[in-house]
Image 1: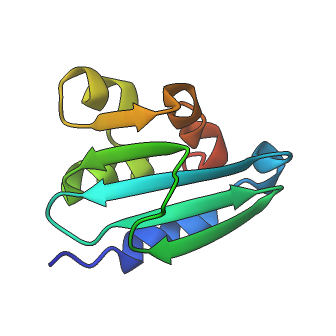
Image 2: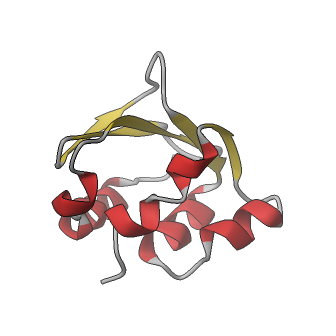
Image 3: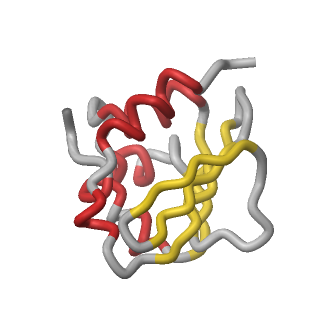
Amino acid sequence: MTDNSATLDRLKNRFNPQAAQGMDDIFQFNVTDGEDYYLHVQDGTLGVHNGEHDDPSVTLAADSATLKGIMSGEIDGMHAFMSGKLKATGNLMLATKLSTLFPKE
């Protein structure tokens, strides 16, 4: 299994609390070649949890390399979605907020 802890630590460091004001959303990440996790963004705070949430706002599924690239800003999320490397279900507009919640380093 792939270890996502370094990617998740980087995400926590890049989190923009101002962009998350007034939000209460669950971003579920289903990693096809690794462990699933989800982010709970609530009123300027970020919670990172292992596993699957019962009722996510949006679910994103991809392999670990694609997710890592999207989270680091090396891969454009929209391009990954259009090319089929990233699958999204639920509130797709919420997925577009990831770049403001986690700006490039």
